[in-house]
Amino acid sequence: MTAAPVRRPVVPPGPGPDAASTDPARRAVARTAVALLLVASTVGWRRGEYFTGALDPVVAGKGLLSVLALTGALLLAASGPRRRVGTGSVWFLAVLLSSSVLGSLTHGTLLPSSLVAVRLVVLAATVLLLLRSSTVLEFSTALARACGAIALVAVLTGLPTLSSGRLAGGLPPLSPNELALLAGVVVAHVAWRTVLGEISGPGTLAAVVALAVIWETGSRTGLLMLLVGVLVTGLHLRRARVGLVVSVLLLGGLGVLAVAGTGAATGFAERDGAGTSTLHSRMIAWRAATTWAESGWELVFGGGLSVKEIAVQGQYWKTQPLDSSWVSALVQAGVLGVLVAGAWAVWALRGAWHAPRPQRALFLGLLVYLLGRSVLESGLFDATPAFLAFFAVSLLGEGASRDRLADDLRTDPLAGGPPGPASPLRA
Image: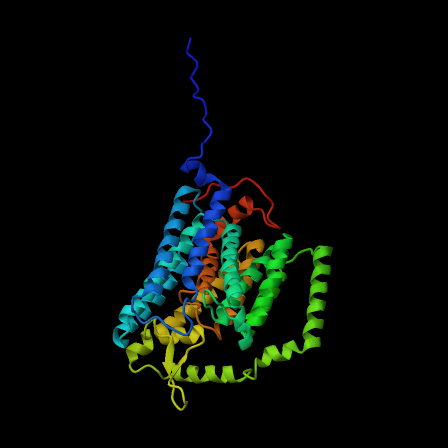
């Protein structure tokens, strides 16, 4: 007779590192912490100042946070299931950064531009690693929480700035447009969850507060494009619940009455008489950007990512911020850079369009918001929270990421994606 095989007793995992790495709650906290470090390292810590290559406590602090975020994302990716993520977006970024570094060779900005390029590489690697260890829902939730937390602190410490007419951050000292961007990410996430049928009191409250913050910042482009993005997300709504319809109509009606009764819309549009002057000021910088290059090399490759201002003529001021992600791409990375950036944006939109419906609602809404505001605001291709969101959506919309999107619907069932057995995750 053959002896029966001896079965070893199964020992339940204890509170060691293996158990911690597989605990969903702990991983969610770790993921949010990494996102918080990411956003904190990309928001402005000084208002009205640009990096010139000098190493100071602010530069060192942001660099340290970036490295900590990268380390955390690496640990998360190594300690749990790995999801496949495409790499096509990495090639777009590589060409864009290479063009800017080549341009900085002759423009005299090699050191600061190279450092900014390295920062972008670190941020991109962190986002990619986070996506390998997170579902779409998990990543979006972590990013929205991080943006909301930093925006809340900035608002509470920046309330005195309301006396100037536009709400800005106190600590960190965010500009009104930066603050509006963080709040916009929160609204976009809540709108997506609402469209998919996940309505919650805290989420609704967060969205209402975020909208109020955007209004007080006076960020007209940000608010307009956010509303368009939310509308695009809303078009994916299949069957609206009665409570959702009543709530939206009630809030919308109260908002219209409040705006119409107080004349707030007129004041918001004019913004203390600066309604048309800001656009005219931008046009001055944009016209200067078309003739700024002093050589064919600079025309093709630009002057480096550290170039944030441009010299203007015929005005009482000497220099002016570029105030457009696309004009910035032209000046920083040349004609090559702006062509690559444009192709990248179209490619990201195409990928988002082909994503499964529940995730497409988020991807298209975010892209419309980010690309729309990028016309009049800089930062889409720089070390900013806008880049984090854009790069993540671009990666997730790639054809190579399509299988993991289906797996995500099984892991985190969204409306329209019934739960089912998950297919093997690809390394």
